[in-house]
Length: 369
Ligand SMILES: *Cc1c(COP(=O)(O)O)cnc(C)c1O
Image (cartoon, rainbow, N blue to C red; front, top):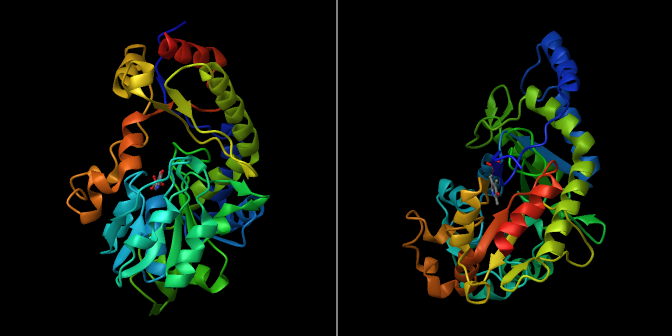
């Protein structure tokens, strides 16, 4: 076996010749940005594939999050999870909103819906949950709270491309959902993102906001930003849609192999497939209980590194522990006992469509021995 480094992920790319064909068309038309033909076609095909009514494409997921909050005029305080990628909370800060951290639950590590209500104040205007690892939040409970208190829900669905519950897209939940198509995600467009909405007029507003707020040549409807996806990326994305199902199928096989190999390892747990859910197998996080396993998560992380295998601690530290946020009243560890425990245990192992099964066996062997 070679000593070639194995990273936590490796992007799947479209076939270069096919991409060249589309690039030729772009070179001929000279339409390289601003809602061109590939942009429109990519939106249409994404709506079909994802089973959603409307989507607005963005240059990345973070700008989609920031714009989603602008689109709904969210202000004051927003209740969110500390167990996510830092962009979730940064998007609130960029809108001048105070993040309020809610602990996660013990079965899927998503926001604990039973703990949301106690965090609502007169300043609360919205809830921003994350479908972490692509596992769906408890939307029924969250929506009920939002309805009673008059709050909006914006889902950070960056991990949830193609995830369905009972045959329906979870991207239709809440008021808006945002996606990320970053290189490290299951569906990538190099960089990219989107906002999903069920409301045609809201989509129009979002499309204005991502283009400086321009509704026409002389009308600006708000504090818009430049967050448009360009034609080169939209064409790349169209090709990615052709292989995404196969990509997810391959990932599922890898995840099942990992699960089988770890089945009898004491002190290592992992998340199961949940009932009635179509998963996308975006990550394979394991959770290491040092008392039962005999080694800490960081010892395992470093051991793999010595073998040129780069697992990642998704998500560590908690967002609430970064300097920017740790002084917030809800950032205290005592308020977030489950998240505080899980962030110390988690290690996301390499997972991508082209990861060889022998390498999975090797990774598990290194850990188990
Ligand atoms: C990747 C990610 C983002 C940010 O998306 P970008 O496209 O990288 O800007 C936001 N939230 C979560 C949970 C993510 O994993």
